[in-house]
Length: 449
Image 1 (cartoon, helix red, strand yellow):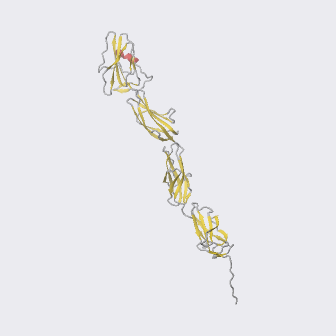
Image 2: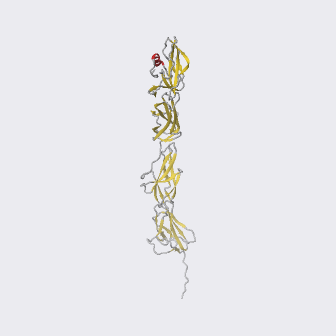
């Protein structure tokens, strides 16, 4: 049979024809030793079946082992094999040569083997599976679907095949895995594009096969694959009356990996340029300080534990949040020093004394970049010792307010106008001078001469 070297004289053809292996299929690869091709077997028994010869009385099996440097001494098997009996030997693991010594019925026998005796056969017994360890990915690794990773491993065996490594991937660890790579060299690394199918129980297995057909393997279990980028955005407030703002956030990760980090990005020039803002710790809100009053664009860049990352903002898009920082109260200016003027006059005039029922108006102007509509209030104070009274509220900012002089006797009446902008800043203007309301006439003492 093809597993032995060419053999001498009468035993050569018989051994070549009848030596059998316990395995059904022999490995194709052999070990090269000093330019000799030596078969490597995992079997427990070696059978040397030779052709029946009526002149043979018995046979002896001799064997010796190779330690990698030199051959040991020949040893005789303890059993003598009769001419009809097959020669069976259960060798331990190792590198062996065998010699079959025939003894004829006449007593004539082959010489016992010496150090330079040519063996009848040579083989290696290897029943040990290769030792394999997966270095990357580790158990419970979190990977991004569709991304490339370098799988690394260690595989050790004295008789590894030339392409011994096979890598398989299973999403659930229960079903038969799909082959990632087969019959690849044992160079310790392989570039793998992770499938996009998501899982939290993936198993990557690495197997190594030696020339005897022994298979050893190791696997990384509980691998998470996440193929979805997280998303996040600022959702409020739209306007703030202070520079220190608590931004409201909506950050979500629909994949199984979970969020790793997030950061707010800021544009002060309507998307012309972007800079990194505060790092998010609480995915519901984060504090941020506007450098000045103005309008800002805000975006969130989020990353999950599989390193899937949302896009860094560029330019301006509809999904970016816009926030106005406004700490400036509305500016209000009264047209008259006393705050009022007759309703039928376009100019303030010089009138400062009024009677109950007179129709007057409060002309004013309000300036603010973010003025809310209908937030003007007009108030009246009869004298400095009394509280302000509301004359009108929720008034427009572009129409003078008209009212009738109340029936209150006073010489120190004042007018105040307030307005509120969208940020909640309140501006006010108080008339710099007072006016009088006359409610009665006292008769003069008349002297007649």
